[in-house]
Length: 148
Image (tube, rainbow, N blue to C red; front, side, top):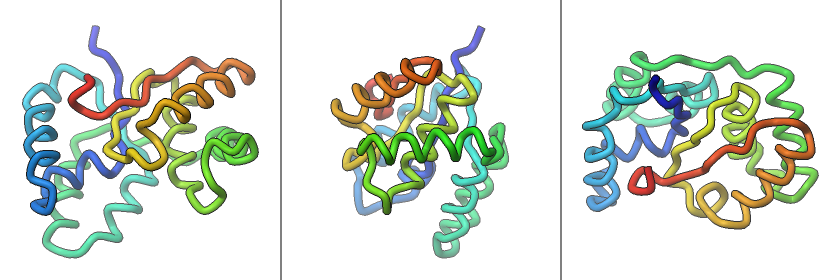
């Protein structure tokens, strides 16, 4: 049985970001094993990709079409607001909270990201686990690709 993972936009964009060659290489290394996972993204990821410039936008959309796309539903929006209320994420980073909420409400145990500012850090991991436990959601792992 394959492990389910949720990719935020930073993972897909890292495949094309020549400004960060080490991150790009690590992402491509992870990509070699992508078929080992049930991969999910969300409508939020698609919307964020649509904000990229061409030709990168087209390349990213081409990759994204291979994955299961989760809708942004009321349950996920509510949980994202709870993360904000609990000061896990600043108000202006609601999209980061929503990525975590989408993974949590859809019972996807691993969220992959390169966002070290708000997602892939110890405080966020601990606080999300606490909130998820309080509201009866599964604990999720928030990881960078090399950790997987």
